[in-house]
Length: 429
Image (tube, rainbow, N blue to C red):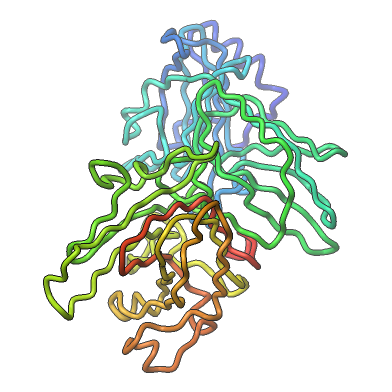
């Protein structure tokens, strides 16, 4: 069925609004999924003249970039705030905003079919198509700043998971307005000669009505911000780009990782504001007396990059990530004690979770924050593991990584402010 051109839509919409309901040109009975909903303002009133936009998403989303949103349909709510859409089976994103763009709601992943209609990444409705009857808008946010680069042409800026991009002017300034509140990562597209890449600059947790002014960002190509904790939500910064990635903690057999007086219930509890920035703080404590002479105590903080712990990835997200271009892991730390880094790969999974690649021991910098650089080529396979028995090195496993852990075998107090991967871009994954 041919969609009407945008120029032909206003007359049709006005006619429909006279009946109290608006729909989209092109919706027909041959489209199996009918969405009928009412849009409410932040104050709780039905909202007329709200713009509804639908984008088709790829069935498998490797990266949640603006380039992956394909416009599908749009509608405008009628006098009673309602609209109707018919869509074929597929994966979609749905955005609703007031006519002045001061209020919005966003559904990032909507999988539609006539038998099973599930909504993901959605703060506006329930889990099924039938529950998408009421969409409540909230006040929109804005983001502005300046991106500077000495040797790269900055092509534009975008926010992960949203279909919007922003140009940069001759001074490197950019601005987003009318943004639906959500966790995002600021991404800069840049070019040097024929080489075009995307750098992940900063994670943000946009709140309703918030105006974020980032100041000047020094574009550093070849660096991926794995997490700077500014979103404060217990997920890594890349989660908003790849759809997964979360922090976890573990201790065995009797150690404890403490983020506050009651213990670390959730990693989000240990992300606190310190020296004007969000940072991860954890204290690691082991028993004073060994219960068994040969028992080695172990505690760890770590994060998954994706769904690599599964045999398959039914959600359609990436399972393993390619670190083959990455040269080192750089951490901004302070505290007391020591730690090691271990990396889980596809080889680890195939060995039933055994056989991580582990770094040497590093001291946590005392005093103020300092940078610790861990060359990835120095990682060695776990003793007696399959990887060790086969004589494997980092180059053999670097293309299929799914988790990174920080290991502790004695008491430590650690503050982590930034984790960066050097030598790669997010597009290399």
